[in-house]
Image 1 (cartoon, helix red, strand yellow):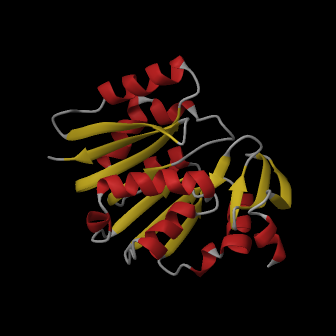
Image 2 (cartoon, helix red, strand yellow):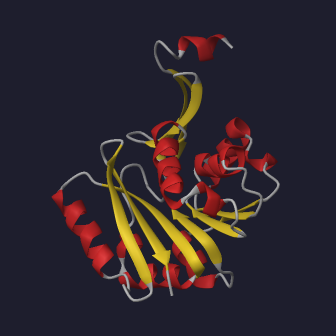
Length: 221
């Protein structure tokens, strides 16, 4: 495809749509691959896929591939799901929760997300879903942004305790955050201090792709 070839020289935008949730959604050929962006940040594939891949590698692909059920809060274009299925060869169940139906329509059209048989996509608010679900998960991936903004509820103690409660024994949380100023640094460190250290271990992987910081929580008891 000629667009793919020219994208190694400069990005080529092929789709743009306004979204009530994400303001603007764009599909672009960049360096030979399709990426999904909002107005100011990468939503799927590109740098975001590298960030979450790094987090999964830190947990250990050997551990991930043996898991039974993974929950993804914030699907967007589904790049982390593609990493799980195509790169790690994960065969278990994946539940993806995405609040924006426009995102899923685009993910299906441009990234063939609907062809992944083990994936169930649920259009819902992540906060509401976490309160309602009766399932337990080996891995919960949190990757929720509205452009460069992260909803406040993600950092509230009630939400973090509920997400931790949904983990199976030896389960993991992989939480992608964005650090744009010192207030975000303070926010992340406060979040870590509120995790029950008797039941969970937690660590930060800072300054990935400049502005992202991953938080990894493991249930040890």
